[in-house]
Length: 313
Image 1 (cartoon, rainbow, N blue to C red):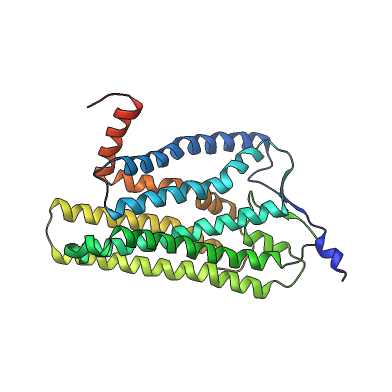
Image 2: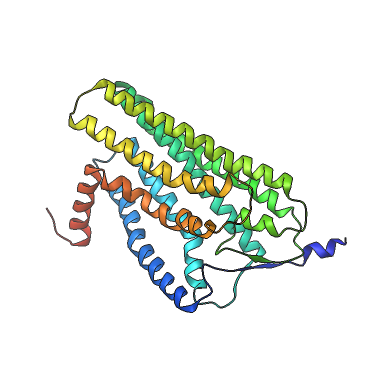
């Protein structure tokens, strides 16, 4: 087969979430409202942690980074999805598809690694309370966050390297509202079993292993808290934080495992899971932390009163 046949695809056509005009308008209103309400909330969390002098614990530093990654992660797909609700032919260039795919896996993997760092932070706080400040010093926090980003970058480069070497000569329609490896691999004009195997290993298997490791670590921490006993405020706060972390781990890793830890065949739930994974859950993650954290809620109220309502205490 001539090489020219492999270079004909310069853009991909996205099917979107629905082909019905009325349904698209309803979905646009829902997702836009959700995005506009939750996005400022995440920004407020970052500003609160940055400006409040009492929120200097490593946990809050990591939470601010999580909020930033979640804003970035959801913004990779949501803006174009909202615009495409008003476009009859939803297209994305080959280069744009690769860029979207790269950042999706870069930020997504970075967040997974960051959640692992946050689990280590809780371990140090609960099991080594007297040495917590020494262990989780600011320098180590910066290093761990940087390593999370570096791990995400390496993971994403692997995905992109596998995709760009594939030939695309036939259909260019992706049954989704964004570009991801699971859809792009399906329409390649070649046997993609080796690439698919590597992708499942690098995305799916890592997700499963991290998920199991994180659940086991939080189960251990909860057992330690119950073993130490006590019903004081510090113990209750530590348990509440652990439950929040477990909720985020399930919300983050559950859809990821469903999408990447299996053969890249099409299933009816794929689009629904993808919407929750790329748009809804990332924006909700820091909100879940905040609702269970008295210090952050108090600091947010003070920040709103001082800077938004322009009222001094």
